[in-house]
Length: 187
Image (cartoon, rainbow, N blue to C red; front, side, top):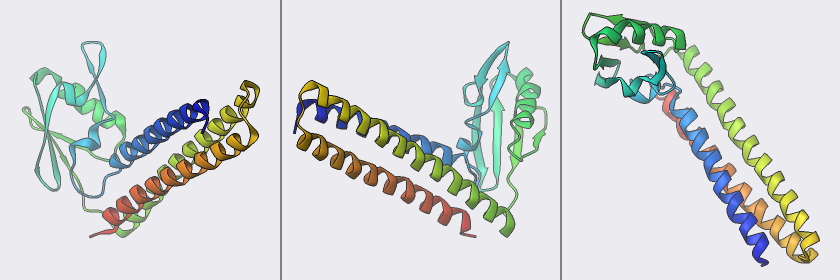
């Protein structure tokens, strides 16, 4: 196989891997009824005028399966953390006792589980679309190599390899979504 096509395939594989990793990180933010510190990953707190990730200004623990406990390193940050959690609109109400903030994760109802499964399917579809877009970009890049003297047979072989990569990464996204759906629907 032509060296230029091989480079294009390597780049595509790396980008598709990043797309799958991003999908996985988005899926971890969807809560499955269990308290997980990663649920708070997208929350930024106003820390002396700078938007700072919650995990960088506090300690986040899970004392039990239904509770998240946030202990800020500076007590004067409690109200800012509380405000950031409410502003993030994650469906949890913070309970501030003056020392720590507790987030009680309510048990999931059947209807809520179905809504979460829909969210999982939406995220998985976004991941698949991203992988398909990367396939299109890779194929376009390979077709442009015709100007550099790459034969048509090598271009066809390169496009076939891109399709194999695409299938591999779409299956990876599907597996992630399937595992998350199973996790959510398990009572």
